[in-house]
Each structure stands twice: as C-alpha cells, then as structure tokens.
Length: 131
Image 1 (cartoon, one colour):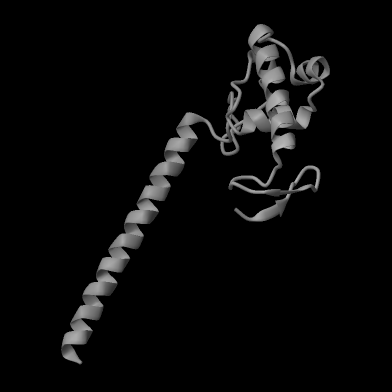
Image 2: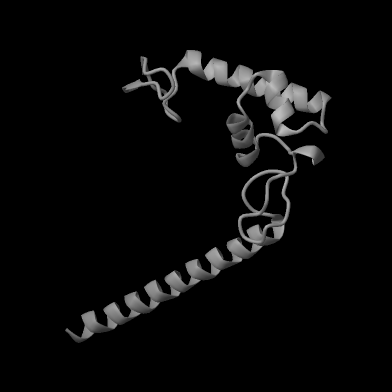
C-alpha cells in the first residue's frame, strides 16, 4: 500500500487503490451523498439548486452524482442532455439510443482491428515461409 496525499485535504495516508482520498474525506463525501440521496428520495420534484440549498451540498457535487449515474434525476432536475443528440436524460452522458450507436461503432472498429491483425499475421506467416 503506497503512501499518497489526499486530493481533498492534502493529508498523507496509505492508499488501498481507487481515488486518492483519505478515509476522513471519503466519509464526508459519503455523508454528503447520503444527504442528497435521502432528500431527493423524499422530494423528487426539487431542482438541483433547492436540493443544494436544503442539503448544504454544492450543486457541482450533485451534478457529478447525476453525471456518474449515482442518482436518478427527478423531473424538475431534468437539465441533463445527451452529449450527442441533446435529448433529455436522467443520468450519465448519453441517452440509450446514442449509447447503442456508440457501442456498435466501437464493436465495428474492434472487429476491423481484429481483421487487420488476422491479415497481418497471415501476411507475416507467408513472408516468413518465403524468407
């Protein structure tokens, strides 16, 4: 376990992996998240600004929870848009349709690379036999 400095407070601690945040700051982050999660569960139609005001958690943190998919966005909080098509989404970066398009594009690109490798290895084998 390496000795690292906490990203939040700068305190040195033994890291167990993941984000370099000391146990005290991690506990505070978890407490903030729980406050927001409970408030949104009890008040699903509140805006991000009101959730922030009522919980004391900065709006940037709440937006990050939503972006990371840790919270589902309530109707009134619906100001997240898909980064490709602009359609409203409840969490993450992309709507379901765009995620599928991206996945298909990645799969297609991956299969092209595999075919290229196969062709290259076949060509290399041929050249090795000739040489």
